[in-house]
Length: 239
Image 1: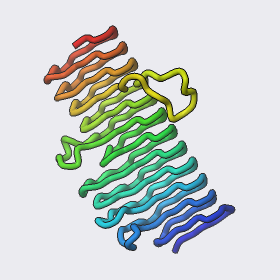
Image 2: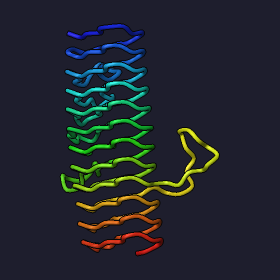
Image 3: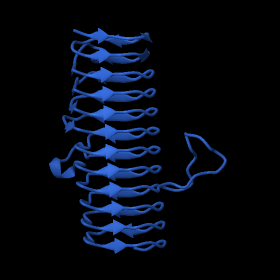
Image 4: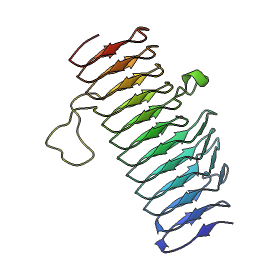
């Protein structure tokens, strides 16, 4: 049984056991070919939000919610997404494919933040174009699990367990004052390095098996090459 309750306009559900409470042009359903398994999902409000599976290799999406916002998207191709949520914001995305099973992901708000092919028990609180991703061809050790991006711009975490980026990120062109911003540098990045942290700064990087490492701030600092347990407190272009 599908339910469309309350006040709204042009909302649609095409599979069972889903609910849209209000808003405009929100959609819950399977792929265009009618496949997939999309059930027990909720869109509370907002506009043009979608929870679905993607043709042709249809995935499973269940117990997921979009609370508000516009053009937010939760979808699985041939993987699955369960117990995940987008609270608000614009064009935020949670997507899974290539057989991956990902659960308990959350995007609280922001602009074009994304979970790409997984990030189990991970969170993006807000910010602009932040990304948490996993290697779809790898095993569990190459997934992002229990990681988080608190805020910032163009920050990314990939294939890392228990890692966090607190803020900072790309520098901005002052001529553009509302999203989408124009960036003038890269964001902060953690890749294939577990239990690491970048507190702030711009264009800082931790990658290639540098577990238990931290960058406190600054710009263009790098920890790489298996340098586990390393720390750069601040400054620029430290390696």
